[in-house]
Length: 436
Length: 54
Image (cartoon, rainbow over all chains, first blue to last red; front, side, top):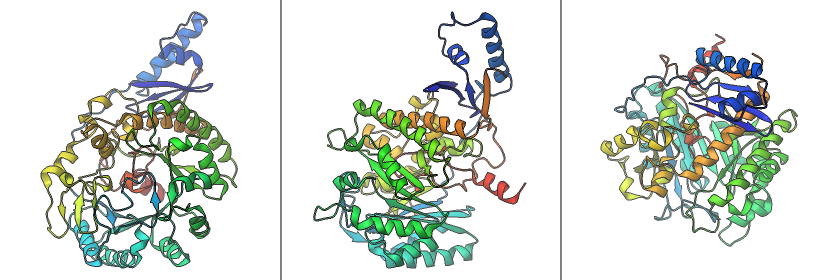
């Protein structure tokens, strides 16, 4: 399978199975698209067709899929999303976690439960060496003491077992004072700082409990964190909604503030929500991604303005293996979420949905039948993905979104598919510009 | 070639001994939390090779 596309006046063909990317001229594009060739010189057409055949002969175009059998029996755990706090000090209009409560009680994870979760992860990780914990909420810094003691405990246990932890914290920044910043900078492999961009955009959605905007509360905290972070991993991570479809301005605004690792995600909400993105918004969103890609290429040539945009990062030559691309995030099998009371769910998006509860870290045993259902779900089981050229870059999309919108993990949430494909074309354009 | 310039040829469809080792980051742990993007991740085995200078 191939995908021939253009980014304005630049033409490309991507070979799905081999992962090869070629920059092509308009003639090759027209041949691959079965367009009218009447205006081309016949000799040129034959020459171009011969080049297409050479690519095919070398396994770089229309290459076959590998023969691969999924190992669905392995249920090793390697990553936990640890909900140390089901409460929040902000009230964001689009929050999927219902003000951090996940439709349950406002509660903090005890140190005992957090330690048990670390034991659970280590005990169920088989021969995996690298383990991951994302301190999540609600707002995890509202339970900072437990977070710190959990890190200390996990590191000690990992040392005993010859394993290694990579920690992430996702914070809204309200409690990110100097002490917290310095701690997170020292201990976290990655830190995700939630900010939606321009002050008016951020403040229209990310509000304090008394209804005021949060921008002025957090921005100096984020700037301080950036100033001490050096070249270690972090993301300023925003969400765009139907109210800021010109989100490229928010990305560039955050870059202008001095941030150089930026992500902005489309909001995921039911159609009747006032902030929801609809099908009619897609042309504007696609235009924004294109504008952003062009400006991105320009800024990355300037050391003062260089930045990385999460969805334009594309490791074509050293990206994940085939198996990883089949299963994606591994929710329910190798990636799990733990609620403050120790209940285990397939991922953070399922927390609070009792029919997806897999057990509790104090039980020592999970619902492996349900976990196998998740482990078996892959690109191979999603009919609509079979003929999609982007399938190895999204692994069939977010299973939680598929369940929440279509009631079935094997039926992808379509708006996400369309945006993924557009971002991928943009990132291939960027890759070509920087590797040509 | 006159009409084509190959930008990348990663041979994604070649299964190696390290395929599926599982040591790479869980994709949702990085920044997204709402989408499932794997193509922007790096293979840990390739990082090890790169860091060892081979």
